[in-house]
Length: 494
Image (cartoon, rainbow, N blue to C red; front, side, top):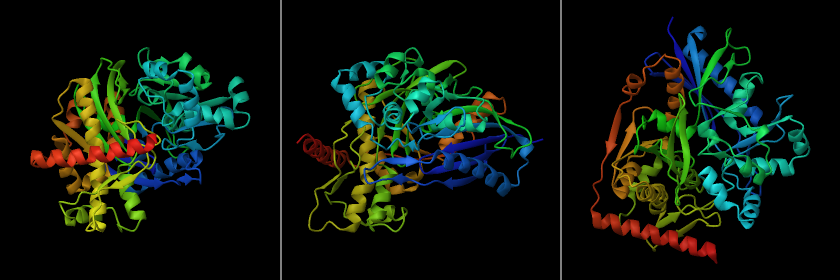
């Protein structure tokens, strides 16, 4: 009997199910989008029940589309949107509130209160993360402070809280397992990256009992078994869970110190594997890449809020009819146009960390038109990633030669060439696109003995872009970007 590995990628926009053969080749995928709930306060939420039901539907749709033998599926790996947090009743398995999405900044007041008390430095030292509503801690704290009876449920041992992976594991195993992996835990701002445990002191600062948080498990460990609500005759082991960006790092085979990848999604995660030695960063953050077979790898990571979301915004304005047009219009734009878009629609992430910054367009002239505005938006993605790369070079002492990239915007050859030119590095694009799901599936396949670690990564082909821009032109363009960002930061201070 042929053996298959099932990969699930539960992302911000939807859930993808992917099936891989014994050699690691993807046989097919099935997508189920879910609703994005945004209110007039800018709060962003997802329905946890919809996410769970979509996970079941995606698996069923995939298997039936491919006509695959269900008995051949031997392992499941899960990757997930990370800092998104939720809480549910341990006895009923029902959410007490919608999942609060990583993009949602409603925890800003909670973080502000902790900063006023002088806790920011201690939290950063323990968790590797700057105090921010971006992470899960402030979201869980908000639920405890604002959703009725949750505090009593927590005190009575009835409340579970965690990231989306822990919710899926709980539901898929019918409540038998409440677990998360080290990569997801490291993004909650409740996890001590030195002791590799939930930090009781930091949890207390946020008013969160560690007892409501999931059990920590190796990223390639055993997370229980699932029959996907009766769809399979026999239960299948869940043998890998990893945050989506960490999954992409693993899927990109960035397994050694100094290797770096950028995922271009709604936002962007730029992640450098720094190996087993911890480096605390001032400009970016430090997280756990994964813990596999008991061994930990750390990463430096810089997140930007608006990457592919910039293209979505341009589409909403009517400047694009589809994301594919971004490349064409960027090429049609005047090369000498001096327009810059700084897409700080929800503040600026790494390396600036300014939640008050507002989006701005600067440098327009009378000849700036539709194509030039689209080009400015497209190039803003590359500029932001380059700033993160520069910060990582400085703080790690590692010279970056290659950037491995993934995500939908990597199909834009203009953007990829501009990224290579402005960052001054080779850009490498894998033949496969769904690197987060691939990483989770490969981790599950390797841990269960289905895949050989060295052989399975050798199957992924690559194409590259290389720097070709004149250095003087590059310096002028990058200098203009930095001036535009400085203007945004000054406006935020006023």
